[in-house]
Structures are given as C-alpha cells and as structure tokens.
Length: 435
Ligand code: ADP
Picture (tube, rainbow, N blue to C red):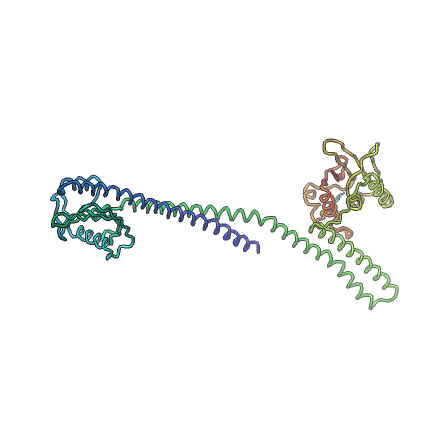
C-alpha cells in the first residue's frame, strides 16, 4: 500500500514540476526565437532600405557594386531583366541548376504561389523602385532565407533584383539552443523525480511507522486477549461435566481471567484515547506532595506483604501547587510503584521522592527507585513501547507490557518527561519531570 502511494506521489510531484519546467522552457524558447527572427528581419529590411536608396540615386546598376554588397553581407543576388535571369557577374556563376531552382522558389514564395509556409512581407515604395521582403523556406536547400524582391522600372525596361540572405547559421544556433534546452529539461526532470522520490519517502515515513505501530498493537492485543479467552472457554466447557466442588474452582478461574481481560481492555482504551488526542486530562492546581502521600499509603500494605520496605521523601518546606491532572499523575505513579514492587525481590527497598526545582524553568521531579532486578540497556530503549516486556518478566501473567506506555502518555500529555536510569546500588530509578 505504502509502496504504491510512494510511486504515485513521486509520479505526481515529479510529473507536475517537470511539466511546469517544460512548459516554461517551451514558452521561453518560443518567445526568444520569435524575437530573434523579428530582429533579424528588421535588420535585413534596414539593409535592403539602404540598398534601395542607393539604387534610386544611381542612374544604372554597377555589377561591381552588387558584387561588393553580396560579398560584404554574404547575400546571394540575382538580376532578372525583362523576366530573364541575367548573368550579371562573371565572377559568380548564378546560372547553375541549384541557384536557378532557389531563384524560382524565392520568386514563387514572393508571388504567394509557393509551398513556402511562413512568408512575411514589407513593401517600400520609391519612385520607380518598389521592394518587398519576406521569409521563405527553400525545400531544395532545406533552409530558410530572407528574400528581398526589388522591382526597378526605368524608361521602358523592367528589371528585378532578388537578394537572398541564408539563415542557415541562425537555424543551426536555434537547433543547438533547442538541444541544450532538451538536455536541461531532461536533467531537471531526473533531479525533480529523484527529489520527489526522497521527499515523498520522507513524508510517508511517519505514516508508515504509525501504520506498523498500529498493526503491531492490534497483533499484540489479539495475542494477549486470546490467552484469557481460551482459559474462560475451556473452564466454561469443564463446568458442564464437573461436579459441584470442581465447578467452584472453574468459576473462580473464569472470574480471574475476566478481570484480567477487563484490565487489558481498559489499558488499551486509555492508549487509544491518547492516540486520538482524547486523553481525559482534568488539569487543576494540585498538591503533588498529597498525591505522593496517597500513593505511598496505598502501596505500603502491598510492600509489607511482599517483604519490601517503602519510603517516602518529601520537600521540607511547602512547595507550589502544580497544574496537572491529579488522577493522571496518581495513575502514572501507581504504574511505577507497582513495577518497582513487582521487580524487586523480598528484602529490597522502594523509595518515592518528590522535589521541587525553582530555577529558570520551575519544575517538579518525582523519582521511584528500587533495589530490584534492574533493567538492561537494551530493555531501557523499549520499555516505554506498547506490549514490551523484558525476557525476565515474560512469564508473569499479571503484566501485559502496557503500564509504562500509559505512564509515558500521561506524562507526555502534561508536557513532562519520564526517564529511566540504573540505581547506583542496583535496581532502577524512574524520574518524572513536570513543568
Ligand atoms: P508490565 O505490565 O509488563 O510491567 P510495563 O510497561 O510497566 O509493563 O513495563 C515494561 C517492562 O519494563 C516490564 O516488563 C519490565 O521488564 C520492565 N520494568 C518496568 N519497571 C521495572 C522495574 N522497576 N524494574 C525492572 N524492570 C522493570
């Protein structure tokens, strides 16, 4: 599911951004090339205007002068005298088959009968001299030309000068520019798709982790619920075939497993509410020393029964009240004390300490230390995970591995912290800090 989403969002982000870049570069290419053609055409028109003005002033056309213009501007110039192409200059053979075809194509384009696609025209009128400029494509040379057709009517004769400016070098640089943009676009698309792949992976990571966490939670919950349920089903089955005395024992088992299931379901509901940000916190100014004292009084009998010694250390002077949910804090403390009692062998010590630090960020600190079995460094990394139990405590039926997860959620929702360290004298120390 996440793999599919990863591909889909990569294609979406990468495709969209690449399409935008391609559209922008096409637009840039179109406008820059259009401007280039227009500027070149304007400059060609200006040159032709100058030539036409010179022709107008001189009484006859000097072949030497035309050859000079042709050489200077890399033009190709043809003269047509009374509709016959005229060999105006022996230095330039313009009568070859290729040149004549080009001449015919340019004239056809000018008269609008050619297949030439994008001709543009401009006409200037002088007395006796008319000229028009246009662009045409020569199929035989496979290139574009600017063409100027100068009509000269003098006395009774009519002659035409055809000036062609090859655009081969311009076409070549346009081709190079298009190739460069194609390479740039492909490179940009490759970079964008790679970035989109990592970016999407980065975005999906917390979702994937959350999903995996949920799946693990459901699997572990089902597993934990299956055991008491199996016992209940087996016991109820046995009730039918057993006598009165045995039945009593089975009923007790059913009730015990029922209570176990009830506790587990309550714990799971608490965690689910924390997940959907619906943790029932009832914050109010509360006296943490009273909460600690109540916890001490509740657990003292249990400690005595287990052969443990429980002590309570409170600040000497009265401390400020803490804005917190007293029931939530009491629940977290009861998890810590219950664990300390469960994992400390008889004869051990459990200590509950409250202190108040009135520095720049005033904070309350509650520690629960024991002289029990201790927690390995590997376990320390996981004990706040749901359904996590260390190897040593797996056999215990009373523990589901949800207590510390719940305590962690409660303290987290108070914007506090809960940490665990080794007790220097053996055992563990859990420290809760509340702002
Ligand atoms: P559980 O219900 O199993 O105690 P918790 O979430 O409260 O679940 O604790 C997770 C695990 O952390 C326990 O299984 C146990 O291995 C370890 N643990 C918690 N508190 C202590 C402690 N005071 N001493 C040693 N191990 C502890």
